[in-house]
Length: 297
Ligand code: ADP
Image (cartoon, rainbow, N blue to C red; front, top):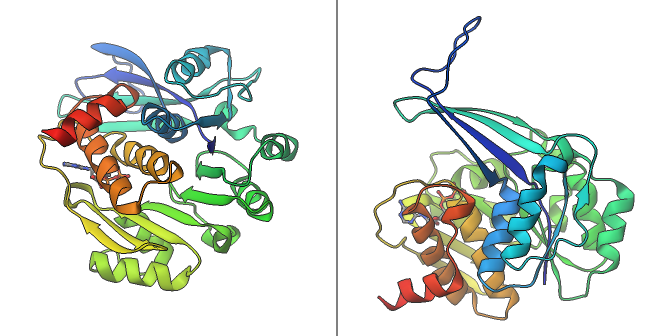
């Protein structure tokens, strides 16, 4: 099972001609609301992949549709809390050129407490995987407590923490990173060769395996099962939102089901190729059936 201490965000997307300027009031041409947040996207991907997923986190009343979405995809939301304040949300402006400007408000995502973390970890089984990103509060405590309980900790350090030294990264079993996060974690030049960045990151955290996604260039892995590199599937990229989250969810679903890392990388690459060929975040995450179909083509 995957226990995800994950963020849930309501994405409020406004289509505008030009970004609003200081002192100005403008009318949006279109508006859409969607479920998002790295945590939710990753739980959704893992659940659609067929994994048993328990999503730990919190929403406000306006975020109930996100809990429904998780449940419909098969994730367990029995420990999800509903708080009095606002749900985590993002106000997204998209201009005519397709550029975006985003304000994120953590809201209920920032309401983790020590008691809640214990309550969730108390029901964990020894072979569960604890997954987290960097959009909730108390990240260091979640990592430490899960590690102390002997659980495998999977950390997707996104968005990148400001103070890496404050994090108990030696307690992480698996890093899920893109090339920028990998370079920052490893302390290497952002323009370094992918392979060198991966080597440096492994050297810094020898107890952790690393999955490093590199966009249209595919993915690299170095860890317990060896070192592999896989190119991305060729697709027409329409919207790369949630590509990394889809990869993360599908990869974990596969390895937690006992599949080899190579198989997991392949399934996750196929799933995220499908996600980039569709618009949106949560709606673009494919089902296991769609991924199987894609791999048969
Ligand atoms: P993030 O969004 O976290 O930066 P990446 O951009 O590295 O993540 O993408 C994650 C995965 O999604 C890649 O490893 C690849 O498998 C897939 N992917 C991303 N962009 C493309 C693309 N243009 N074509 C095919 N697959 C892609």
